[in-house]
Length: 554
Ligand code: T1G
Image (cartoon, rainbow, N blue to C red; front, side, top):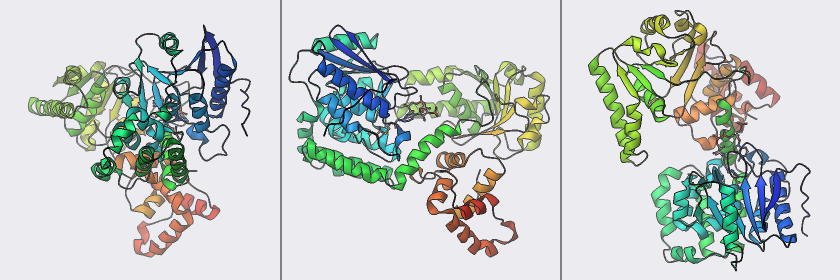
């Protein structure tokens, strides 16, 4: 039975003709996720191309920031809406006219699978391509584990699918994943390319390619060598091995059977806790950057120049963050020896990163060229943001903020990197407590992704965890929520995953607590209550939620 796909009235997919080429465009902001309406629109567009004799070729492109960035993750766990993404990809691949994918931004997951269903792929040089499903505890479930190795080769497919890392358009060209890089306007060039290939037959279907699989067949040890080389990295995660097994099936089985292995493994992972934890974490990470109670109308202050006080480990690492983002930094120290030592370590760190090929020597010089070391405190006066990163002594901090208050221009943000001292007490020595905030970086600050922003009682909108073992940690987490020190349970989880190495496939302590069951945690704590003595007290929120069978994170 074939499903009749009707394009909804306001489909995110539009079609237009350019000569005998049908241009299919998706406009589904922010990232053209392949939600139900997009899938329905794509199938309807291919049907339109098939039924119109005047159409000789098709170009699929996206408006906005990016080509399709994958399946719509918000649809996971909800009742499925037809067509499935694999059906969409098969429909594109089985089109009797050549289909060209025109890629810009990031072609990710299901987006790259759609592109692999197309007969040709062109991209702008800045485009990136990847299958990051493994970061969501999954695998490419729309034929990606079968088509990607056929087009890009098994070693590249293994690397991309098990790390989730994106590759550049240049690299993709190098492995045959992209047929041409386009300088200039993408769509007109993609149409010209479609004209070039319009009459070539047979159409190059990714699912029918075999030459790159043959190479892998000649090297049967390839997969076990790959497992051995990456064993430590994948430890604890379920998805990487499932990705490997699907790509193995691509080598050992015909396409029609390989996609069945893929579907089975995909559904197994989708039903598991790890995938739920990692999808939860995807959204938690993004939510963490949003500050409740700060209106949409509050515009962030512009930060063009940063000052850092203290060239020690934290001051140096914090400075590198801004330098690497192209923001000039004035770094202040009290004596030349400390200043030279600090800036010397920053250069060494950059050179070490360059030695690993993560940045170029030119980028190192660019970043260090933006650094202005000084022994003159007054030079900080025209910075837009000043971050103090000196010893954790309240008197020293108060002295610095008093001096900053006297010299720094109005409207600048005054921040302390303190990890536990009271921000309000520091702010109180200034005439502008509304401009004072805590910015608690984690060491090494140029590596760790986590930044805790601590709002003082007077911190203006436009300028904010830890101790115990698991059950007591959850109880403390609940207390932190009760006291309003964290906006949401997921923020506590982001701090633990990025700041303290909590495994992402467990989501974080609060997500884990929900998976564990709150009543079980309460019972466990009751059992230790006597041993813990008078210091211990239950969080009312934890008791209440446990009693009502509620959860923290969902
Ligand atoms: N589905 C739903 N929402 C998404 C989304 C997605 N795939 N990607 C991003 N968003 C939302 C995000 O939550 C945020 O919302 C807004 O878009 C902007 O995102 C069958 C199973 C594309 C590199 O894993 O890596 O395909 O917070 O802040 O920094 O094989 O988003 O504004 O409300 O991150 O410019 C595979 C996930 C899916 C890619 C852009 N794809 N996305 O980064 O913006 S699984 C992915 C990203 C799949 C198939 C399988 C990034 C980005 P809000 P943002 P950004």
